[in-house]
Length: 383
Ligand SMILES: *Cc1c(COP(=O)(O)O)cnc(C)c1O
Image (tube, rainbow, N blue to C red; front, side, top):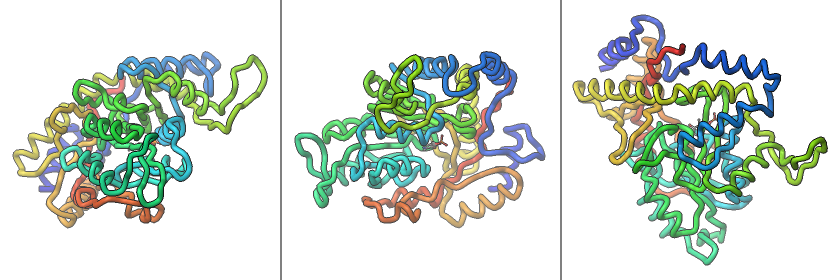
């Protein structure tokens, strides 16, 4: 199976010998031109027209009212949690099957993650597991949800759209609403993914994206917070720009802010990338369809987009039978220069988070042991 896979990927990418990465950015003359414009403007750092333009583009694409750029996705998540009101001692519901940034951002607030299991179909937070954990451990008071044992506030819920596949966000939103819990989407991997006709990242009070080099579009490093709430957007901008009060010359700061600004250089790069996004999304669907056909012919399970959703297929994935088969596949493909990777080690098995509260996590364990990511770059030439 590995041999057939290696041949197939080399053909798919027209690459007979060189190594094939998991996800390479598409970039070229357009990015150079925009970055050149930023340099010529004299504004390369914390102020400049490209930051505003990039924010406008992302908001317009998503149909979101406001977008606030940040220096990376982790910083964007941290700032989003702070403006949502996550404070020291709070509990934040999330999934253990995620990239470590989700949990780290919660930890930066002095809050603690609570791990809930994921769905087999979406690979993301399971609404049923969420309901079960709340029924067993939480009580609803007038102003929100609290843990029954410790009396700690259950402030927010952060589902993650794993590999770009939308979670059942409408169910999660309804549960959060009933319990008085703020919904913040970690849509870092899901730019362009759609559920029920709406883009991922626009269902919660706030949504967060990443533009790291391996994401569907990149700014080198970068992130974005999106929201429809004017106050939250203003707070997010203020907090990510050192909480400086607007003034022609004085340096006055009215709280402890962060220097989480996206430099104008990176935003210029992002403006060029946003122009490519539709083309990238279209080709990634074709790559996914090709893998799906190969999998069907080989009798290998492919991770399809969930019913009722359109995935951006950021990273395509196979589900192998068990950990041994997965490890043999990883060894054979990587040795042949075809990059494949396991999913993340689940957060509850990392030393920093092993003591965190959690519900039963059988699907998290199963998927973490059997899913493999495969080369997924768009085959678009970076002109
Ligand atoms: C990429 C990613 C982030 C943010 O990463 P940065 O590298 O800080 O931009 C956050 N959450 C998830 C799930 C991610 O995949």
